[in-house]
Image (cartoon, rainbow, N blue to C red; front, side, top):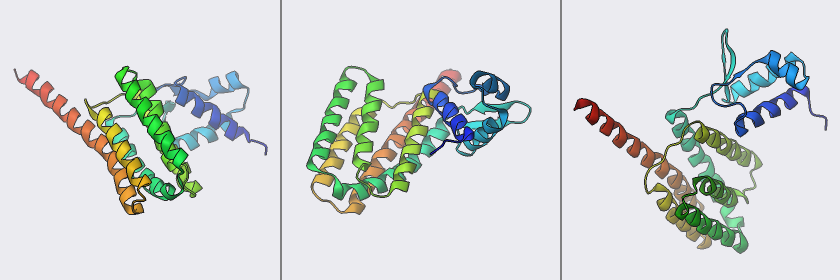
Length: 225
């Protein structure tokens, strides 16, 4: 199937954003894109409108298109949505996961523990996404899978815009991963699996929110001295 010029432009821009070539706050100037890639301005405008609708760029009057800069609120909203989507996808996938799938999931969790012990957060993040994708991989609802994938992609971009963490949360998440695998292996009710998967994601949101609140309280106390 032939790819349209607008689709080509969209993929160029989306890849550039995801790989950091076009970082947060970067202005996407159509005239420059036309010269660099040899594609006329109309497809670029169409692709930018699509990226704006998907939340990747802001189109600002008199300034053009600017790669979105994400904040804590964007991260939290994405995590809350991902918790619901992924919880449902994991519940649908669970009956179809094989013994080999679950063995691989446990192996990924052990690798995450090694990455944590080695102070390698980048590898931890990659393995964590692999783990969650594996538990959703046997879901037969392809539309739901696409939605989960889109939110994971958005989450990775937000994490590159700014990084938040809560001490101890990564270690706790590994124990929750093992608990989720135990539920699936034990043939738990899908509603129980969905709730556990959703709770796992929301625990991260709450832990980071509490950590941010403690930091803010500390800063306020310092200023009051």
